[in-house]
Image (cartoon, rainbow over all chains, first blue to last red; front, side, top):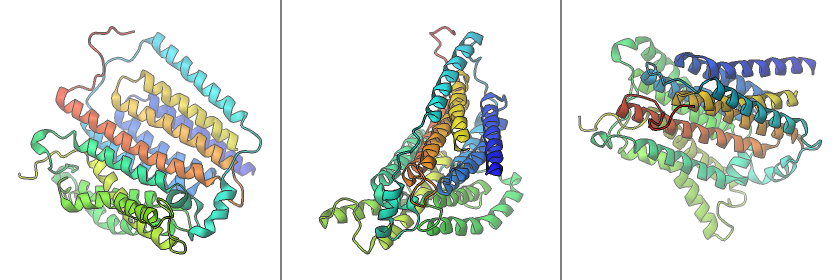
Length: 312
Length: 104
């Protein structure tokens, strides 16, 4: 227990220190490196909180794919420097406000009720009917399936919004997420070594998610990281955003979810109610489609709006 | 132990909020906003951990919500960055300053 305490204490101090660095440091590049490290520390904190599923999602997405996104932006914005921030008075006022909010939150944490409200017993009781062993996956795919489906829709809307930022002349063209050819020899080598392993790891994470920690989100995030590595190294170039198969893989997750939901509605048991005894296979089908959609959507979100016309 | 993480989560919210307010650079604002968001997720995780019961290490419902939260935060950040890059491509600057208003 005391070793736990020491580890937790170190983790807390470390994470706070890196977070402060992310907020305070001057150089944009250094800040982003700090943010990636901070994401990894957070995923350790999630392990301490007995939430391995969240830890994996945080490591793969909040730290990994987010890092790819931020470095891409940094490469374009590094030379920019915004004007002066608020003067000392403004900074003091902001600090005072933030300290106040922190103190209020700390007070809430300290005075949380002795017996916490929980849905764990209910989840445990209904877990058997789903055929799943991982309660978090059961919540995502069964008990709160509607949330998960709508969240896929949010991802799609975000992607449509990103694409709509393309200038008219490249509309329907290819996003560009590549390094200059001559500089990336080692990267091509890395891509060829890592991508096969990463693809297996991503599929594995989604597959074990039924019974063990892992989920379509963590698996999809790893798949998208592999896709981005392929783009970055120039092993493949990004498909045009008007490409049929690209669009198909983007919507297949939501589409399968919707079809199965409507079948449930038509058979009289209700929207997104799975047929008894068949819950597990149905969930696996949805998760396959979802993992593909999540992976492709995230990769395309990082790759950004089209930047090259499909005709040139 | 759990309380320590809860307190650090509260501090993360404060740190992130401070960065969001004082940084003039939009990308720094986005990062700071993510730090604050992570603090809120972690706070939720502390609540989930305290709800450990029935042989589970924590309440799975908040944990699942945090997973969807992380994904949504990522997509919102990606959209923010895309808008920022387009703004930069159009104007050659990342300044958010309103020319008509005076600084305070």
